[in-house]
Image 1 (cartoon, protein in one colour):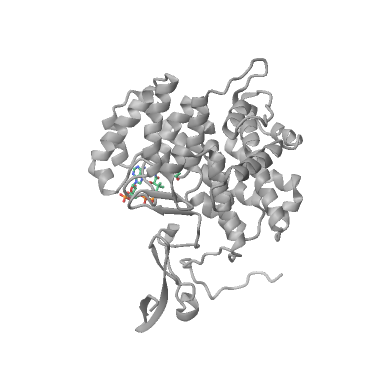
Image 2 (tube, helix red, strand yellow):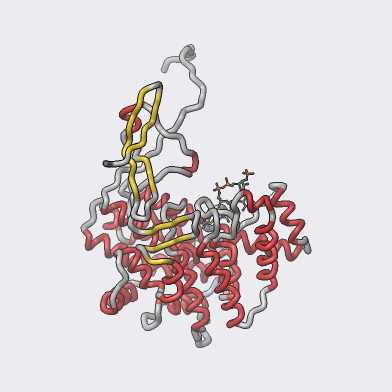
Length: 426
Ligand code: ACO
């Protein structure tokens, strides 16, 4: 017999179905709650609210488990290429050789952006934050491809928008960086793999030959995979809610980029490095900084997570990778020692233990990005590059399932005024 949850309100009993996911997670289906009872649920920050059913990513925060389409993140990060993972997330299965080749080829062919995008870039001051520039460029794709505004695209058209966005994102990301440096833009090189092509667009100097260091492109590949999806987080929920109004893919992803930018979400990777640099520059001890955190004067950025309450599996992989990559590149970055000392001190301190605060994906990723030569204000942009396939897969799933427009309710707590005098009647 189907499991039911009983809710008693004003002495009356109501029964609602219980839904069970494939990994045995449970939910009470309250979609008929208001119709039947007149009540709504109150859940600020959606801490207990399942907004959708999804086949893309499974996450168990208590046990530090993360799967993309059923595959453990540890395995994918160790063995796959980023484009394989992109394909997996968006199309639901790992590609065979022919599928991967055709997918790679379709992406390579569309990696050029419209030359008029340079005019848009020209309008930004060179000190503009590249996240703002990137979200504007992605949104501007609605102008270059107005057919993307069709709320009912065919499957073929939708797939073309997806390929276009995947293909042009590295070009737009690298151009937002080159703009901030006052450097000429580099064009994509189709013979190179996704990561190497991106690196040459970022760093190749017009007057010198550029060699992609495989250590750097492998590290980038791993980081992008680890960022590729994370179910219904703040930016992904933003993409889904914008997409639910039948806004275009480009408009929805542009909104997701802005949500990711905030320091409590993807912007934390920039904040972490700035925090570590500040600790070093001020000569403050790790113990004094931890004291400041405990007095709630500052947050320990890169620590804590809404769903991981034991450990973040991505942070575990990144910490190991961080040591390996810095070793391979022969870099000795003293902020890595500060980060490790902070982690060690926090993990033994009751303030952090009681609140289940552990390093998240952003704690060590910035140290790797810095070792790869990526400037600090580009860290969140790198996160966006990695998260793109997740946003796309979630947007595609929402549209395929014809999910209704997202529209939460509220409890009104403002004043109630009934009697008033009309001063002047128009
Ligand atoms: N440093 C110090 N204290 C913290 C931290 C932190 N990083 N994170 C949470 N806390 C404390 C809070 O002050 C609160 O304490 P209280 O119970 O005494 O009031 C308690 O832990 C619970 O914190 P909430 O903010 O309620 O937890 P929530 O789930 O809402 O927030 C979040 C999660 C936003 C990630 C939070 O841990 C945080 O701000 N972390 C730092 C920013 C960060 O690293 N963000 C990246 C997250 S990963 C990602 O989005 C890609």
